[in-house]
Image (cartoon, rainbow, N blue to C red):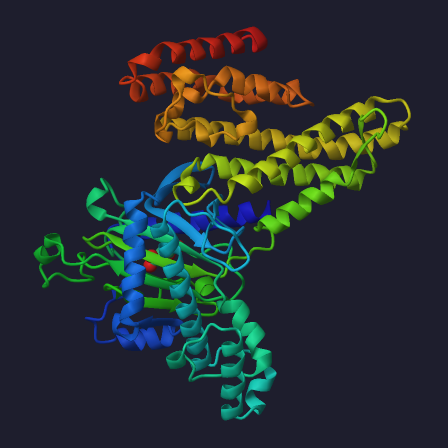
Length: 571
Ligand SMILES: O=C(O)CCC(=O)C(=O)O
């Protein structure tokens, strides 16, 4: 509640500022301005920039090739993110690569890592080239980790009491040993050090567990938002703080713009402000209109680091140039609730409350204690909305690289099914006479609270799925538990042709078999009332017109769906 109020307040502030600005713009600097370096040093000192010639050529080659491979294999996707209750496609296309089982959540969208090669994990890649691409990115990750450590050390951004007392030379030796023991430092990167104690802090703030890759070709974009405060031009990524990171951790960004296209040469150098042909990272101090903004040009192979709390005190945006550009943004994602290990642990905890009678095989709950029921139902929501729906909403994109996630997702779905049974068992138990009125009321009110949230989220996700389907039709968005087997006549090998696999009637019939609630289903369908017909009409019109052979069955599905609504809900 408080967070929402805070966000509303920020929105109003932003609106007011933009109104006040009118046609005028705040000042910002580029390297062409005399005070650029002074401004950087005083107000943006935690931004570290390195030119491409500081990076080993071999690494450049490997990484740039990996970007091109991933693009060639269509591994980049625009995310359908949710901002203030509305869905938007990001202008940049993305892929998350990182530690196996790790996820990264931004703008209400959980991305699942394509695992990079990791000891102890068996990962089947779709092709040797994709394996090599992921391997190159882990090499870049290691390199940027070391560079971040060096930069933090160089800026004395370590907050250890011992640092002051330890002679510099000792510190250097300790840290060099420590990093080499961990096997991540190369000879030419090892001329820096901190004491062992600092190692933990440094390591936790620079050990990137994921990299979020971005790709955009500005010439393919019909529309790009204009930077609103400074007049910096086209934005590929709007002003933001990076989310879901370990506090004070460094973000490292390697930038690869495919320069040299003819479009770039047309720019008139005499124009004021940043060169629109060149990609830039824009920075501003959050909630401060006194300090000028900064626009730093990014050429092929440059990288930059956002150290310490820079990501909290400042915002950044990405300003588009004319050529296609990739970036690899290495982050220490806060994985406390974002790894497979974590969610499996939660599910196992929930299922401890389910028992099977050894004779009859009947299932029952061990405890009806309010706290236990609440915990189980919350985990139920977590696995459904934070994992299963998030994963399937993004369709089969992960299969472009590897099938790694399919097995754990199937296991989570299995857990979820058992939790559905547990929800119905709660209802069954509270109907029994054994409980006192007071006990029953307590159980019901806590149960209802979580269930109401489940109902709200199911409604929201259903609407999102339909929205998504009408934009990029793909039945893969629906978790397999909610899906019907596709009739052979409707099968398609191309995932985005598979809209016909969605059988809404079955989808909702399945929904009805959620144990506890015609009520949930009722309002879920009511929520869809106004948009359903529209959605399906659009699908039929826009997406299926070329598929004559499946037009008939699809129409039948729609009829069945509408009939279904009519019979069951009277509309
Ligand atoms: O591409 C970049 O330079 C930064 C991208 C970024 O800010 C993001 O992905 O959050």
